[in-house]
Image (tube, rainbow, N blue to C red):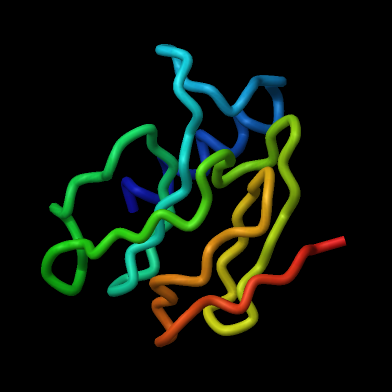
Length: 109
């Protein structure tokens, strides 16, 4: 419940604000997906393994420049296997699909 509330608050903020995909220290934000539980986060460093519903998170960086909400210079991609939607400046990598194997990303138009 708390995770959903935080995510909803972030998405509302993201839709109401125009901001870059760089964090406060100037680094670009990367998108990570846990191949065990499917959680998607954006971070400028490798996220913590704590809190996965299947033990410890097993993070895969799928996008170097992007986020979980639309940002300037990014495009929406969806995986045909797991259904996750992320926003990246270039095609995401395939590693770490929670549905098994590699992601099959396609550009949403």
